[in-house]
Image (cartoon, rainbow over the protein chains, first blue to last red):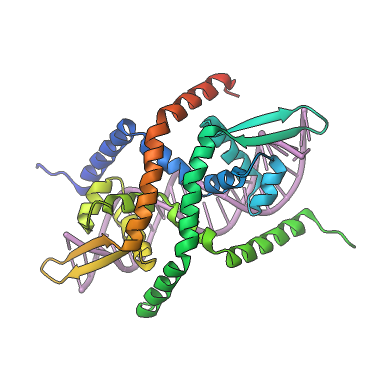
Length: 135
Length: 135
DNA sequence: CTGAATCCTACTGGATACTG
DNA sequence: CAGTATCCAGTAGGATTCAG
């Protein structure tokens, strides 16, 4: 039959979606910078350069794995620079590039939005939860 | 002994981190709106209200589960409204609230940033990958 | 049409230990 | 100090199916 199953149609949609992503790779980048750790690291570095362990302390809940991973990703994207000072012990500084600082401004704006409207959102949540018959 | 093991110190850090999150719940909200699907849904609704299936088509790669989940979350946060028209079949419209539109502006700015600087990031990635001894 | 429920996989990301 | 490597749990999220 001319049966296009739901699965086939869905897969087709995914193929088109992949093509869409290729033709519009902006979404990949958007997804990347929408990452939790990216926001935190960029925010942490916004005031000025920091060392690896400084970042780890400033962000607190982060594991070394995620910290390194995020830093590498941001370095690869040209959002920050990694400077190794071959002293003993080694010292590594991370600093936002102009591009990174540019992005930091936007993320700061989003953060400010969250601070400004948090109580509003919070009240909305309580209202919603109260109305919901917890079922 | 006064032995604070690494585990203890780490756990202590997590406790403090939790307290930090409670005292500064903005981060939770920031994390929430940094979600991939949140960005996509808010962007999709920015031009105007849409029905459930319209959203599913416009966002393409999304599964009904994630779409519903994201919409519920945004509704709970007061970022959009859900309007049910009890016709047959049922019709449900989603529309950004003023708060949601406000956020949409910021996310649009971030999206614009991504579009503007994508080639720069892309070149940085190629440079990075070329320098990296693929090890 | 608009979801809700279930199942299941794959990836995220934390803990831990080890290296230069 | 600044990572790297390994292991492993939790969960995000896709596929599928069913209901109102």
